Length: 430
Image 1 (cartoon, one colour):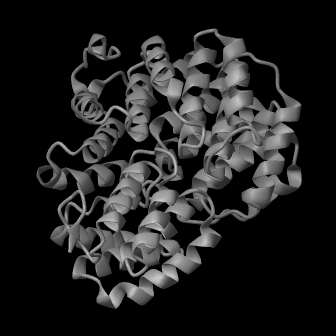
Image 2 (spheres, rainbow, N blue to C red):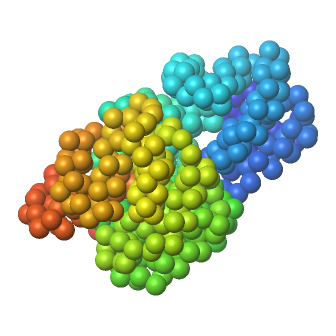
Image 3 (cartoon, rainbow, N blue to C red):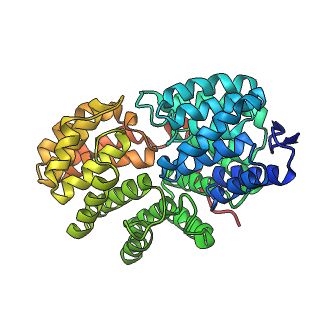
């Protein structure tokens, strides 16, 4: 019996299947290109290898092709009785996730890691800001994410994947010093970790190091393939920083080449949310409204996300529809929000509608009551700044300048939970 990189037995006797499976796991965990090809190679080497089938099912789901997951999921379930107890539990987790029962999958994961804490592939869907906890719609999800990971630190040691995810969880609750140590260790161990570079970029963002962050990410991503999972999102970070640094033409070039629907390569959720966020922030920064780009994005949102379902997606769809003047699609989100955070989605959608109409007071009145709960929408702190910037932008346009300043300071304290982290330490590695 072969073993995976975390020293767990695999139900295959094929070294070729094992090697291809491990390569696929590492590619998916590091946001590197084509994990799907590796999992298909593992299946070709041993068609009876259950974990290769379930990994393929998860991969196509992650890449926005959930409908293609049914066949490999069914085959994994068929093979599961002959697998090890860990593999059976692993497959059961993904069966829940792939059939729309994410919270049941999270519950199984919490139990699973008590016995098999180093089963990274099974743990991964529950982690990060786009994971099961991140999109749970619950208040306190950032603390819950860290609480899931911290007890596993000893089991993983210096593993590059775990330390990068732990860094992200620490960063989201303001523990920037600890996050810095973990992400630096992760990237030193595996420099081509796409998720790790992305997480390091978030740390630059959180501590306000725009130029250093832009320079670091631009250099790191120079040879990051377009068909890598988060190429679009890494480009979003670069475009935002370019705009903030006054490199406006470069920002728009990045948008048109790497973000805009039809140009971007990546899951639909990234294309929609990154485009909406960039276009709106550009307008807040003083750029004229790009009506044709908003119209393209509204059409994209209507095609891929026609019905309210997930808070994070729905608020970005609402923004696209509001700025494009697509009242019918916007009304559906306002009138029929879905999910655990539905009561937060509707007022944010109303605020975007009012902002598009230049109704500054209406924007403010819609957002103020939910400012303490917008974490429930999902996404990172950097992404949810969109809500705070909308409120601040409306306040400034309404002449409430002092109030805008107080709001931003209240919601974005400068490292107060850290005792003042030395920003000079956050320089790109030589």
